[in-house]
Length: 271
Image 1 (cartoon, one colour):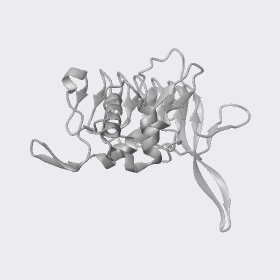
Image 2: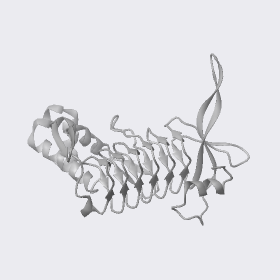
Image 3: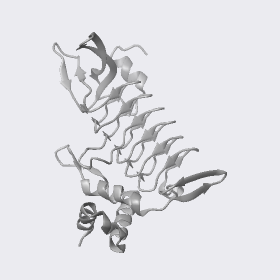
Image 4: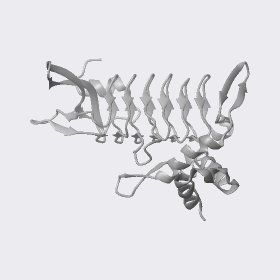
């Protein structure tokens, strides 16, 4: 049986995780995720993404086969089933105390982790910055040269296994305190202003034309996005509920590492 068949069988019959062959298969997959040999979701030739559900199943099955252990890092102690990543010097990753990445997450070279958290199954590609108190949830996919500003919350997803992870594509800039969850995908070079909150049901409205254009679950490439509100009727009356507004496009000529302030100024938004 190949690894996928072993995992699928153990998923259907959890008693199989007691078998050494299954345990080895699960640990092999987590090892592969840790070094980037495999990833939970991968881009396809047509620009879409494919989620590999069986790898998510392996991550879920990893928890019951691991034992709680005491982890000591200098004066700090942790008590968990999953060890921390290590060997950052060989990986070419800058890690500022107290950044934490769990084993089974992939952090590519030239990435900077400020005091932040990266969970198992996540993929953070080269040149990206995970800024102070930002969180990259389980299985989230972060592209190259992405900036996750302070306090950004990138949601994780393990179950249901068919659910897509959050995907932040190359050269995107995510402003402070943004929250992106439930499989939302941010297109290449998009810029999100501070405090934008996106869930699978959030309305993302392009207001740059004569008529609004609505998206859900996807921010188009090079979009500049700020928080907004729209009216919604309830039994008790009409109230404003959050949405996100696309107010312009990042210019092709703008450097891909442009600051959030510059991107917003280009679209006549005060900062």
